[in-house]
Image: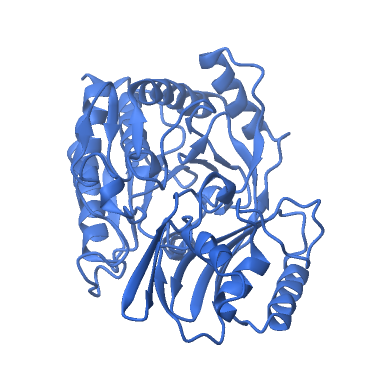
Length: 412
């Protein structure tokens, strides 16, 4: 088998699904949307066809494919839901019609997280073909709600025993060992203006429309991941700074964010690397994403943040909360994974790092690492128009994953 060609084939197969939350409508067997459920089923069908056992959650929240028998197992966590494509005029090609151009695969979800899912599947297939002795079964878990709440993995945890070792294929090599607390809030102000924009909590708002005196004023921004808001240009922030003495909603936005995306919160010491991003606005409500270092006492931050909002005349409603994590860098598992990365790449300089991203890396308390597939020099346009993944990234990640999984089976 040509594993690289097969990764491309499977990736394009999965990328054709518009697996955005709610797309296609909801049913009792597709509570995140029919498109997500169809993509999940297709991935499981492929895994079953290559000799893996599969399981599908009755509500379509998640599924998994496993090779090997035993109680303790290695988990590979990926997800098949994606963020909305945003303004289609910013795409060079339809986002759900995957295109290969100049050794790159272009589509929404290419980098986050469908091609990594395909790499994971074919990495396990390589071990199967090489008849590696599976001391631990390998279970690839496919989530359907990573971008909108982690309900998939939370349900998985209530139904199945935790893995012995976990690799999350949704990050940057060598691996992140610390993830921030993530908080989502719906903020309501007294406002009578008709303003709409944005599509998700975890992307910087790249457009906003203000219906004013029977005219519609449209402002464009630049999308970016909510964990790195200064890399984008928030359309609502731009509009608010154009109207500094305007509606209370604009005044509140101006009091929260600098034009470059840096926050103005006074409820936490500026020495902490906290980010705040506004992802959506609908009339008198706007929706924010906060990332707070795990060293911060979460309960105290929540109390102080909500009090600061009250003082601004803002009503708060917390819609999501994911606690941050810190992984033990000195564990045998962490040291083995780092060594495997170094043996393949020859890179002994790049070190494990902290991240503001919210991945499945926070899902299990022990032996859980967000491990690639990107190198720190890869550009992928994740959560932006024209998302893509390069051939060299695929080849590099496949080699690292095969070596790491084989080593874990043989040594741990």
